[in-house]
Image (cartoon, rainbow, N blue to C red; front, side):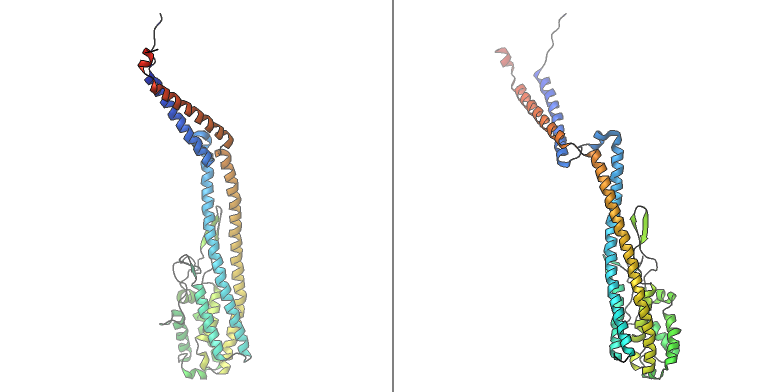
Length: 352
């Protein structure tokens, strides 16, 4: 038995429209792939291997975040080195003044000025900051490490120096009677009461608010290192002690023999400091190199991961270009067919 079937123009039009919608989406995807160089839907294209791509991207995000942190660390290390260069030059200049003073080549006023300038320079550099963080404060990076020795009111350190002097000699450093202090008595004071003012415990509690714990930074996924020098370092303590001998003990009013006793002690301290500063800078230089090396390794890892991800996610531009052309042709044909269907009329059939 033969039956007749009917095909309506509406059903043909609807099917064509659905086909056009699919082609339009394929066109959008192809255009996106040409623009980005990646599959339009990586998950659909890669299927079970999508997890590999996601994992590699997470790895790359992690190491690039570390690299960004390393760049900040390198900036801080560079700023710290610059501050130490300034301190080192100041210490060398002061040592030259002390050596000259021992041969009567430098006046006492010049020596006092050199000590005061050196103390101010040391304080300024230890209080250096970058991006709102103090470079030499250790983990107390939001706290200024040093108070002004010459401030008003006097800093806790300056008060401690004066208190020790008064306790030893019964007069204040600015009393003209200090001219009667004998060289041996001053030497004893410098080696005992004055030295105690700069003990490790007193340095940390009286002179500096810096933490003795350095800032630690993760420079790779497996390596954490100290990336700062703190003001609690004994080098800075000794240099401050030398400056304070000349600028805080009534040096101008002392007799020449007692002055020479102070100059000799300050010279020895400063000479040791110049060598210690070199060691501090060398240690900081080693840290800089380690961070730089870590960044170089990260660059290699990023390059490897980028190539691996590209191998999974990148398209073949030539193939997609061909596909884009085919989709465009098919879409134009669909537009044409739709237009023809829309123009069909029952009158055309009746008049045929």
